[in-house]
Image 1 (cartoon, rainbow, N blue to C red):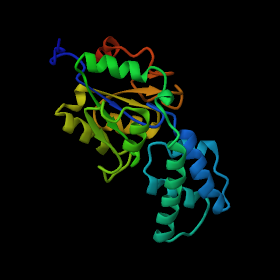
Image 2 (cartoon, rainbow, N blue to C red):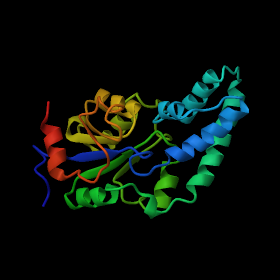
Image 3 (tube, rainbow, N blue to C red):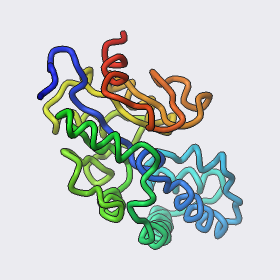
Length: 225
């Protein structure tokens, strides 16, 4: 039976990297390769600061950290090379790489007639979802090809709610990065952080993974003010 749309969760928006699948290690390997060519040793904490940030904004940050004066053309070339490395690593993904609790959560939401959307800064989102066997399961996909502003700007989440024909206040976002948390809150949405409670402390709720997320939990979060 359909949910009571007056009082219950209507849509859930999933980030991709770090929420559905752990591709952070692939990003780290790829960015580290590029940074090393500029004589900069990319650190794990640097990679954390790149989560949810667009490819071009990320390469600009790395150039800044490396104190490297780079032309726009060189930045684009480096970003393209990073993407080639990343895609090669992602090509080995399978449905077995879906993070704990995510597939069960998606099935539960679909059975409850809750709309699900992807809201990711990645321009490779559809490629990754296809490798995971999830490409056709989402009602809406908004990725880096559809937006001009990266997180923490809320554009990606606002576009997702618009495509679902829902109000932001009736949706919950699942995120793993501070930039994504900020974007969701800026969009007037409730947000569950998946990961470290200190890093994601501004989220409405922080969980280690998606295993315990239920319709009841999502409804409670929606109702909180």
